[in-house]
Amino acid sequence: MSQKQIAKSYPEPRLRSLYRDAVSPRVLAEFGMKNIHQLPVIEKVVINVGVGRHLENQKLKPEYRDAVISTLSTISGQKPIMILAKKAVSNFKVREGAPSAFMVTLRRERMWNFLDRLINLAMPRIKDFRGVSDKTFDRQGNFALGLTEQAVWPEINMAAVNHTHGMNINIVFSRSDPKKSRMVLAELGMPFVKPDPSKKQPAPTAPVAAA
Image (cartoon, rainbow, N blue to C red; front, side, top):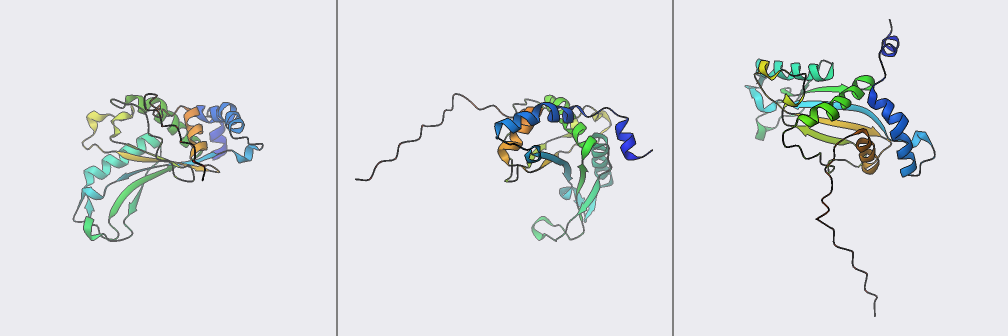
């Protein structure tokens, strides 16, 4: 059975159908787009965990390596790859070729299912959660966020974990900018921090005409 046939045998990811049927028309109307090919598209999600500070004699502790690989494999459904340092940095005591991070890149069905679990399962489990900052978009509309520990994922059994670690999650867009990407993610359920109505911005002053 081919990969396409396997994909068709499973139900369509919930967030992808939501994006196609509900979010896309709203984005088209909001930004005055006339062609669906102008719509911002989520291309991939990249998850990475830095391990540089856990090196001993330029080697990664096996127990920490196994913990990171297990976490990323469990939450993504893919085996992560190891990223090696490209340059030596004396200030951080890092040599070229030393382990630097573990990374997973998700696309298509796995990407959409991961985003669904991130927004609707993991984030509500964050202690004292008050929303996600919307200040981490880059010029192309890519969004970055960080989690401080893997315990927010319900599929991780913390009783069997010896090392806690955080992770960085990057949501990569194409044909986008910060405003478009923010609207797409907000419509998909991303819990951005709501503006504080008590902190009103001062009204702009009118320019003084030259005498």
